[in-house]
Structure formats: C-alpha cells, structure tokens
Length: 495
Ligand SMILES: *Cc1c(COP(=O)(O)O)cnc(C)c1O
Image 1: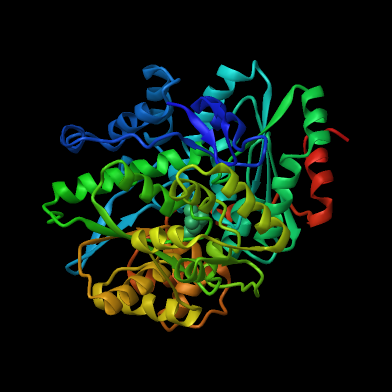
Image 2 (image 1 turned 135 degrees about the vertical axis):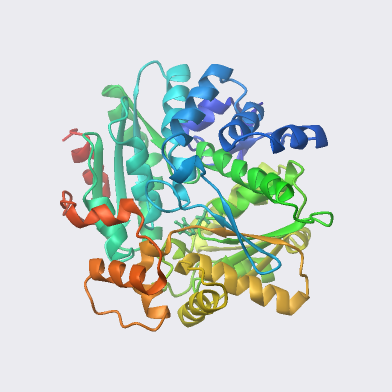
C-alpha cells in the first residue's frame, strides 16, 4: 500500500517511511492512498479472533512492507501483558444504547496507550528498514496523556531518544507527576510556559528546521514523531473501532441499521480512526465529535469556518484543550478527493491568519458524516454525577464531555441507534474533578483524593496511579517556548 502526503500527491512513500518520518518534508501528513475495504467474510473471520489477532489482521492491510513476523512481533509486544486481563478495549453497556468503549486499561490509564504501546515497535521496525541505523529522535508536544503514554512506550527502547514538552499549567497534577517522575535513560521531560498549541507549534517548527536536521544528521540521528500526526499512531486506533464492532455483534447488539460513534475530541486523531473504520466497511452512521469549551471543532462542523483566533480556556478535560486539531488535515484531504493544492492553501491560511473557510461542498460532506457539539465544565460535572447516580458507573471528565454531547445529539435528532462512546481516560486520572462532581470538596491532597474517590464509589485505584505515591520527581525545569530549540539540543547532548 502506498502512502501519500496531504500537501503533495507526488510524494509517495511506503508505510515504514511514513511511520519513521512522521511528517512529510513539505509539512503534510501521510495517509494511505486508499482505505482498504473489509468484506463480510473478513468480519466473520475476525469475529472469532482475539484483540491481538484482530490487530494483526488489520495491520496486514496497512503495513504492506512489514513481514508477517514483524507484524506479529509488534502486536504481541504491545498488547500482551500490558493491559488489564489482556483486554485493551472492553465495552461496558449502560442503558439501552450506550456502549462505553473503555480505552484506559493500559499502563498510563488513557486511550493513548493503545497507540503508544505499539508505536515504538512500529517505529524501530520501520527505522531499521529505511534509515540504516540512525537514532530516531522523537519530539512530543502533549496536552497531558500523550506525553506519559509515549514515555512509557519508549523508555529504554534502543535506537530512540525522546523529548516531551507539556504546558506547565495545562495538565492535571496527576499527569504532571506521571511525566516528571518518568524513568528511562533515553527520555527527557520539559515543562513550558505556554499552552499546548504553543508546544505543538514549536515542535513542528523544530521538526522542519533544516539547520537542526543537519545537526542531527551529523550526529547520526534523525527526527521522528510520536504525536498523533504519525500514521503509526492512527493505524492502531482503527483496530479498536473494528474490534468494538465485532464485540457488539458478538454480544447480540442489533446493528442492522448501523451504529453511531461519539468521541471526545482534541487533535482529531481518535475520531479520524473511527472514520477510517467506517471507510473500511464498519457500519458506522453518525460520527459525533464532542468538544469542551475550546469548541473550535463544533464551530467548524456547524459553519465550515475553522478559526483558532479565540480565547483559550483551561478546562477540567485538559487533554482536549486544543485549538489546532492537526489530524483534521487528513479528513479534509479525503473529502477534497486528494486536492493537495487546496489542502496546502488552507493550511497556509491557517498558519498565517489562524483561520480558513472550506468550500461549500466540503462543508456539506462534513455535516453528512459528523455532528459537532460541546459542553462546559459544569455540564461535564453534572454528567459525571448523573451517570454515576443512574448506573453506578464512574466516568472521567473527557468521557463525560462525550456523554453530554451524545445526549444533546439525541435530543436534537431523536436518533436512538446503538452508540459506541469512546471512554478515553480512567476517572482516577482526573480524580479531583470527578470527586468534586460527585459532591465532595476538593481540598485534600491528590493522593487522599484517590482514596476518597475509591471509598465513595467502591472502585479500585488503578495500580499505575496508586504507585505514583512513591514516585520521585526527576524533571523540574520549566522553559519559555523560545527556549525549546535549545532544550532539545541540550537533552540530546548536542550543546
Ligand atoms: C488525547 C485525549 C483526547 C483527545 O483525543 P484526540 O485523538 O486528540 O482527538 C481525549 N481524551 C483523552 C483522555 C485524551 O488523552
């Protein structure tokens, strides 16, 4: 299968090239030239398989320059022994129509693990194929969960070096501690003064900086990316939507008229994976895109105008505090039927004016496929309480945004098809906000909060979070965004 850049149709590469490089040289994102189609037979075969074998099955379509043995190694390494009960993506059913896809049973308790447990395997396998032994330097900008999941995935992975940037005041206490206490000889963590978009923009700039690339080349290194722009992040996410479909079929859910998917969205990676599953033949109807108060995507879906020139809010769902949703570029490329010039021009507008308007026909296509909605922190909080009161089921702030918007969608449309709701983090990762939503005050220290939440809800604290109690803080530096270039250099021992 060939991969192509969203900004240059002549830039055609292999899957290993796309994964090893992360981003194309002209700043575009790689995507498969065409989405593979799964048949009824494929689904019937996969219904009987384990998650690991379903993942292998799907990867074979996308990673055509990997051998079967390489794919097997990657998938087994990533998904055996790393998730609770070796079930990376179980479903809990609430009421008649809500299927909660729990994507937080991995080592860092957020859905990013599904991709970042396997990315190091995909990346090192890819790098071996194409870059003759160069060390991969991975820069990550994170709004909280990516950073920790990437660090866990890549710690002490030979041939890799990782630098993670997170906004000093834009992540939860628990997320900060998770990252600042990270172990591993090849990982570096830097807090920055600024928000996630500042971090992401600076990382992209460093990434495409020719002078910096030359310095790396002289030291037998090259950049790669673990951010959700890397195809190696997106591909594993497609698997769990296909797998969830098969699990719902197996549990007797009536899917004759298809089902909807609702995703709490930031960078547009997770929901794009669901769209890929749909293109591949999974009978997904509406894709419900849920945002918090940073509702740039809601506005975009409703108006066709993407405008990041607006106030930025810190919310109780910090992993979605994002105004530049990078993966949207892939969707627009697909909907513009591969018009690379058009994509280049609107992305150019975005970086120069912070804004673009899509053509009417693209807007119509988007509105056919997607519904956009948002909620604020107090609605998020009410939703956590309501779901706990109604079902005795605890959800985190991000999942609550999704559930809230799902309810808005139903009351607007009356569409009561079965719905798969992506649950993206353990409630214990955002224990303070969750406890407050349940009516407890929040002034205890962050570990007492965990115990209180556990007692109040009779649920267990996930062990990766419980063991942070004894973690030692290792990374304390805070950088201004103008110092990020130097921070990377010094982390790599290049100055
Ligand atoms: C990253 C993240 C999101 C947003 O996912 P995108 O793929 O960036 O849209 C939502 N919830 C949680 C908990 C996350 O960590």
